[in-house]
Length: 339
Ligand SMILES: [Ca+2]
Ligand SMILES: [Ca+2]
Image (tube, rainbow, N blue to C red; front, side, top):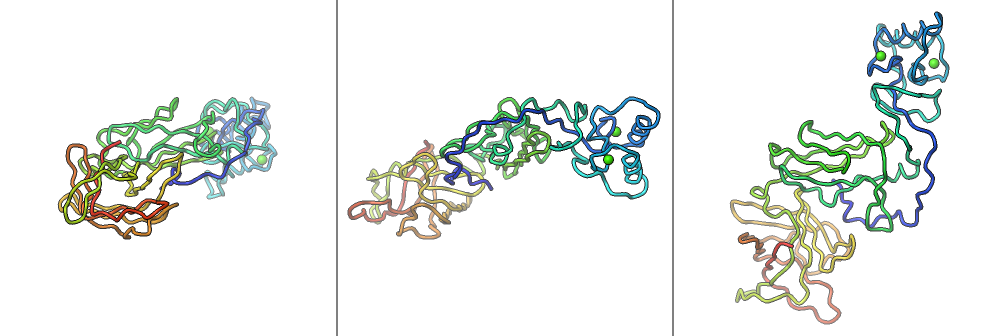
């Protein structure tokens, strides 16, 4: 799963300047007539051009079936051997659309769409990320993705690009390419993982991200909570925390995080959680963090109660925050409200 929000990126100080000058037209090698697939008419058209002076291909790279940067009889033979005699397939891009950096040239290739007007600089391309603030999404609701690069060092700067979006399983969501918004279909069941793919410039980069679909009935934890009170051991009395947990985040993929003082992408600690709706049992197991409290039980096990937008964690303690002086004694429960 993506843990982007928990990482401090290291791409500081990079500058993103030069953009390439030439367009990158996607094509399929061997597909002489740009129909989208290889058939016998592709080598026939190639021979017609070579030996009878008939029209030439719209995309020279596509006609170069064997990828040797020459157009000759061997290209037609190569395609025929592949189609009818078990010969090797054409070198990439095949069978899907892709681009060639140092090829013979490709002016147009209808089956792979329009060329990208401004190909992305290779350095930027290599640093692209597909980022969403949260990977948890309710059925029928939307998540917005940003395609871009981390900047110093806490947000993703969008990069304009030719992108073909797709989702898996097919039909599980609709993608709005203009905004990068992905809307999950209402019929998609709780627990489904949808993989979103952004194909940048016909295969130059493939970026994927998983969305975890949930319903509040099946997972009432998902979201961001703020600590409102602490429950004293023995008496059960509630008192306001000296230093509340400002962000207790539950994601639908089974991860949680705890942060007393949120700052940019900083988190105190994180790990996995599990719950049982029937028994009210809950456990949180810290896996790593910037500050894992020394008094934290791993896992921390207890029970929970949810009502009126309030989450009560009982017989469970998420740890004592950093204190300059003597820290207060651990308590026996914590109450959270939604942020
Ligand atoms: Ca064809
Ligand atoms: Ca060739």
